[in-house]
Image (cartoon, rainbow over all chains, first blue to last red; front, side):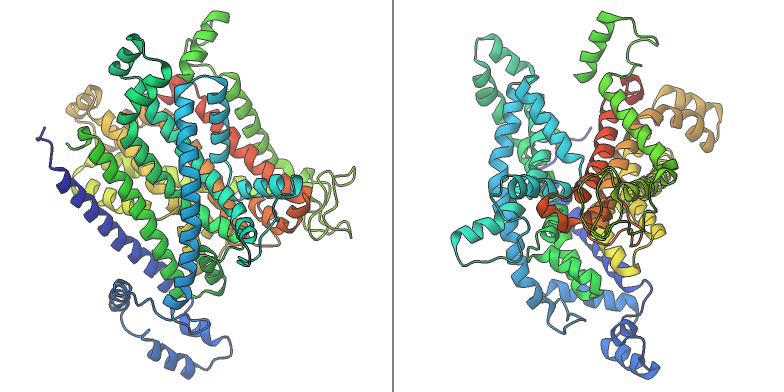
Length: 319
Length: 289
């Protein structure tokens, strides 16, 4: 067994793997959208186009060049922030995306701020009073949320908060920023739904991480010496569970990516995911590619972050 | 922890028929019953439907539950009960086909990689890990954008999404089994690689692999429903349960049964599979350990 490696070396190694993964992912995204049936020039010009017109457009768009050189050109463009031009309305993709990206990041940010404290306290509480009624209710709720599709959580939230309680509008159409209460109402449903989806994962992983630490002999020793259950968990066990918990938080946040696609669509929230779903129905390939890359990058960075945190916090993984 | 509880209670009341660790507890049994129920519905349901699923039977739309229309009618006035029965075929059928393909491919490749090792193992593992770096719903979106949506495309896409996970799981199990003495003995006997994989390794990872198959089935149902909900899955006039929710989402603001019942159908299937897998007899689940 080799000596434990330098942490920075492992971190760089992880980043390298993430970068390699990203290249493979971009390769897959590019070729899935470019190579498969349906010539872009034909789609753009419609059924009635003459072969000459199609050939001219192909030439103008550079579609006659070999695919590999187009892929490399596309990658270089991506790296320089040049995402190409939308097929549908001829607007620079960067322009289309930038505003939407800010909206999506706002949604993700608010969701994180709301869900992380709630999820951590529920998870730690469930571990502290393990086997109690509280623990069982939390476990049952999280399992239910995990095993149903995201849109069902949204449906249920609408039923509860809009239909039965009447507190919020059912489906918000566009973000109206005229007053504070309007902003709150527009954000409330998407944030509630997304928070439920990612909290469920976070609560489960936090609970598991704390319980694993509680089961170690030194925590048992604290209990035997007469520390209260609360003190045992919060003072003795928690500091050592922080690494796995941070890992759990980063991993759960990666569920934001899938969740956002559904939630932005169902609530008509003007974010990147909604943009992408609309782009799929119009087959606007440059827009789809760019949105897909944004999601892959955020997903990969969160997963890599979780990996790095786990590495740094647990020396046993560094072998 | 769960298993210990059930074992002790089982031991206290009656001696379990096949030794400890082999019997299902009641949560697992409920899960199994619901799963069998939906399997039966997917098989014979369309013949039980009171109305043709595509026919407009009521000129009023989003009607509430009544004796004629057990689960109300949808946004066009079609019978929701019949459409759910028909939809079970798409949801259960597509998910089952995809999970079977994904796990068969994944497990075979995983076992071969574990036994072969070397560059084959390394290249395949790296490549499939990279696939795991794509969020599943996003992958579906991109493929549907490129080739359009049809049932074979859906099955193959879902297979591609969940095969890498199955591969990783089976490979990890097979690597462990591969180092055990009985495999070494078989190899020393001069048995061929196919023999090693089929007769020595496969039987010893079967239990956990089946449990993994169940969980993967749930994920596939979720992604399929998500895609259909976005309008990119099963195309009209056919509809799986996710598409039924999408079609009738307008009825949500007044709580129409047309949007609630398909949701319940999805939830009952996925939750019961989870309940079943979580409470599998420990002897099946942890066979390799």
